Image (cartoon, rainbow, N blue to C red; front, side):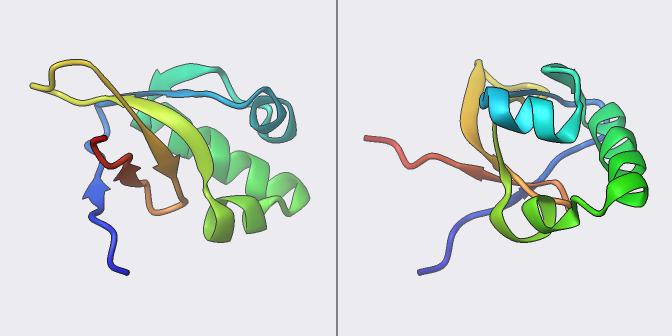
Length: 87
């Protein structure tokens, strides 16, 4: 099954949803994509936590430029956003 992906612009904002991810990755809950990426790269270099970010992804919400509100999904190292399907 192919999932739609969206590459985040560096100015767009995301917020992590899972407390465990926040503690594991030592990230701020809400940040611009550029800040999130910078923090991820620093963490990966320091202690090898890349598996979570490169394979599983991290649950989050994203506030897109020109959007109408927060979108839930996952973010991976390439910062591809996987929106939840509309119910």
